[in-house]
Structure formats: C-alpha cells, structure tokens
Length: 426
Image (cartoon, rainbow, N blue to C red; front, side):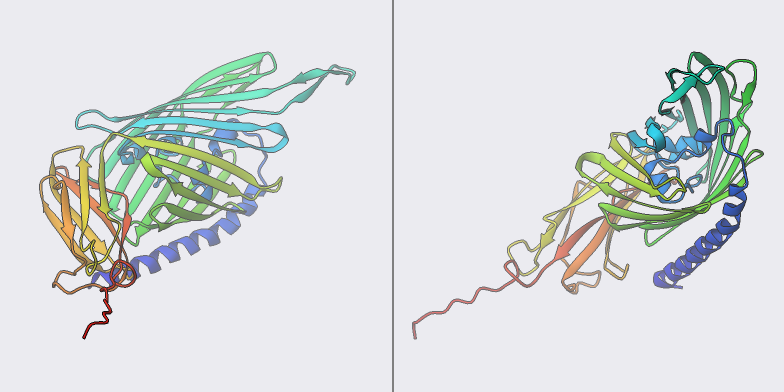
C-alpha cells in the first residue's frame, strides 16, 4: 500500500472519529445544562488556554506545551525546547483570568519540569448588612500553582505528575489547599496518541470559614490523530467528575502554512475556534474564542521557545530558478537531540504530499545540503511551492521533528528567463 493510500485511510478515520465525537457532544451538552454551577474548583476544571479553547478543550492527548500540564502532566515529555507561555482574558462582569507557564524538556536522566501559575479575579460585588444597606464592595480571587514533572518510561510511554497548591480569598477570608494530579501518555503509532489523567488526588480542600470545599477527583481521557505529515490533527476528550458528570470535547487543527494554523472545536453545547501565528525567533501568538450563553469568550496567548532540543532547516534562497543565476538552493541544517543522533532525513514534498526528493544519512545532520530542483531520478521538477522539514532520530528512537517550511521553484520570470539580445548587425 502506498503513502497516498495510507494518508487517505488516516484522513477518513480521523474525520469519522471527529464526527462521532461531535454527535456525542450533542447529548452531553444537554446534561451539562442540568448541572448546578459553582462546584469547588470549577474555574480550574473548565480552564481553557487560547489554543485549547480553539480545539474545544480536547487537550489530554495533545498538551505539548507548558500550560498543558493543567490537563495532563505527562505531556511535558512532548516539550522539546525551553518554553515560556503567557496569556490573559477578560470575562464577564469584570472577571479576569491570567496564566503564566514555563517548562524545560526532559534530559537523558532528568525528567522534564514545569511551573504554571493561574489566577482568577472577579469584578466587584456589593457588600450589605442584615438590613440590606450597602457597605462598599469586595472581590473574590483564586490562584493555582502547579509544579510539574514528567519522564518518558519507554519510547511510547510517559508518566507525569503535578503538585497543586490552591489559594482562595473572599473579602477578608483566605484559605489554601494542596492536591496532586497524575497523567500518562501512550503512543500507539507515531500519528496516534492516547492520554489519560486523574486530577485533584487527595484535594485540594479549602475552608474559608466553617464549611470545607473539596475539589472533586476528575478523570480525563483522550485520543489525538495526526495526518498530512503532522500538519492536521483531530482530537477528542471525555472528562468526568461526580459534581458535573461527563463532558465531551472535540476539535481539529490544521496548519495551512508553516506560519499559520486554524482550529475548530466543540465544547459541550458551544462552538469554538481559533488561530495561531508563528513569528521569527521562536515566538507564537495564539487566539481562541468560544460561544457562551453569556456572550463570546476571547483568549489571547503568546509563547517563546528557546534552547532545548530541536531540528531546524532553512533553504537559502527560499526561491530559486534552475535556469537562472540562483540555480540551486542550500538547506542549512541544525539539530540538538536528547540522546545521541543515529540518523536524519530531509524530505521535500510537493502539493500532492508526494516525496519528490529525500536527503538522509547517519549520525548528526551535516551543516548543509544542496538541491538543484530535480527529483530522485534527476528530472527537473515543475514550478511551484514545495515543503520540507528535518527529522532527526536518536538512539532511544525518539524523533525530533523540525518546523515545516517551504521553498519555491521558478523557471519563468526575471530569474528563469534566458536573455535575448537583439542586434542591428548582419
């Protein structure tokens, strides 16, 4: 079976999984409307980052960024570079929610570590006495501190844990509590991931005055399928706790260009969506929005990646003409892997996702390789845009996948034209 047939099978399977997930969501949304609001820790249980919101909150098997530890701490093993993530949102009636997260990738002997700080602050509430006379205003605020660690047990299996500290304040009353989360991540094949987590183990328990508030244990499970060389993804989660019952999330993500992604999701009875834009120097901007019966919710986040483990390739020049002065392009290669590199490959694919030229070798990639715009048989390729990315495999079998970029062949126009000189001579 060829590569194109495999891709078609994965696409059909992924679309079917997404449709089934969304059909199930329709029934779960009705149940969610019957639940009482304001359960202990509900703000944290329903927390959604900008990217997460765009895919309907289905993040248990996808959480490949620092703030993903909120859903599944095991996914920190998918963080390959030091990453800082910051985001903010303004909700209804002056309520604001903010997040700050930082993670470092795991090393050969050390696990990956993360720190996440989330805060919720309400607008002003009116304070009254027994006679209902106004006596000023007060605010309610909550903060969550997550210390995370994760480690790959094998090539396919990872474990992670959070130490969770919660602090709540209402007017002059304050309370704190401690709990834990556990998560796991399993790769069936490189394109299919299964994630599961148990949140709020042993607490937190908070007592502001006399009545304790106990965060209910929550169970989450999900699956993510990637296809089109990792450019597209569909994912679905199911979350359950005793207070709110089962909630199902589903979403999709598609990188229409190496620098831009679009998302569509469904969270209970609400539709969601979002975009991401990659900028130079490891900066990414995320935006997410979700419909809500109180109004549309918007979230914005920004992340910065540096150091750590990476694979990078860049074609210079990015546009060339085999018939012009720029007859070849040079792919500059650079990589750093967790373990010793044993092989590398640079595949160049056309718009039909067909590999037209492949460079590969053992050990670390060389500083650069040259491409003359021809396929494996030595035939010149048609004008157009081609995509490429560097993949490096280490001795543990872990693949470090670089960012997908594009290069263009032009044999017509200023670069490819053969000059014609008209002379008045005989």
